[in-house]
Length: 345
Image (cartoon, rainbow, N blue to C red):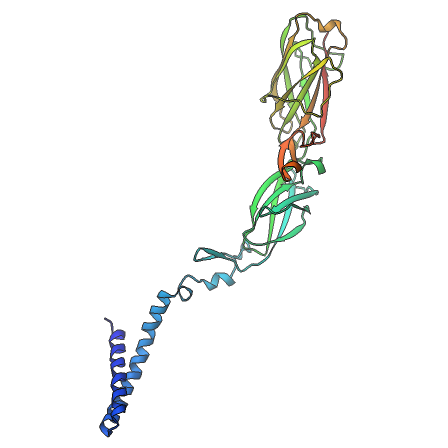
């Protein structure tokens, strides 16, 4: 027991004696009451810090859980006000946050322009122009479809990001996005010459099986960020199979693709993402039918078409954001197409 506790106890006893003495009403008892009152007052004063210590240690809102300083003073570097946690609840002195969405060209850092789509805490989607703003609250979860899906922009690919609004008055979310580059797809004959129209061809006969080198690339500082597919169309009687080995796999032909006539068939293969002017190398396997010589039929060619993958907004699944070469209505997503032909002699 420390000096404060002892003093407090003496003070309490003195107060009791004072009350008893006053009730006795004799001169001597009144004198005793006066002396006891002095000791009682001293004891009460000593009791105050004891009671205060007990209360601060027992009542949460009087304890150390409340940090008033962080409510008023922000981070001078980022402008963000540190949130505090009290009884498992995060507190923030900021009520509204101005959110800015800023998309930049990944290679040049130039503003992309365009429109972005976003959801706050899973609510219905809204849109905002690039570098435009909207209001959210600290702690809100924002899903962003940059460039608003491929239906509304042909210069850039869309991207998805998920952000959390900080305890801050203003927050800019920035995304670097690839620009859509045109594609170069080249096929070389067995002499390693680039097949070009009817000038340079591949020579095959009945039953031949050949593997031709192919290359695919895009432009400087541009990309095919999600790759795409290549559809090969040819006479079903001419070839037994066509197989593209370029890092992808066999896929379904898009529903929007239509063959030239009923005697034609198709094979489609995915192509992984490729960037800039660096060639992606592969081979094209061609298996000629045993009963048909392509050189004897002028129309016997392989026509090919490249389509890009990009994000689209699927209205059949609650406007979810999905990646592909066609949307839920079987329409082409990215408005980019490259066509060519492989000819024979």
